[in-house]
Image 1 (cartoon, rainbow, N blue to C red):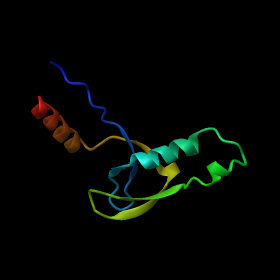
Image 2: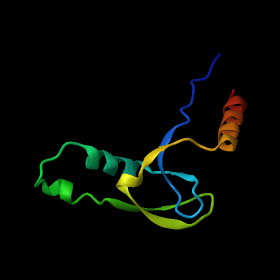
Image 3: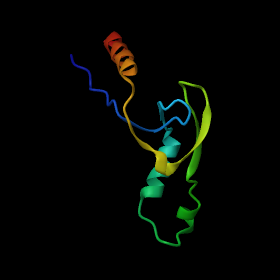
Length: 92
């Protein structure tokens, strides 16, 4: 019995303080999609989409303000991937 492979990539930002990747919540992901989607030049709904958000880094426990255009594809550090692999094996 084989488990589904878990995607190791996620959308996030790099912490301004410690530089580690921080996963963005789904609400911010929806804002990013709205920001990158097609829109008219004078579309008032598009103009009202907030382009900044606040996130707390779980590694250093510090908060910072980030912009939508700072979101990148991230890969978790090797130690995190090993812990996730151990959890999926334990679930079997």
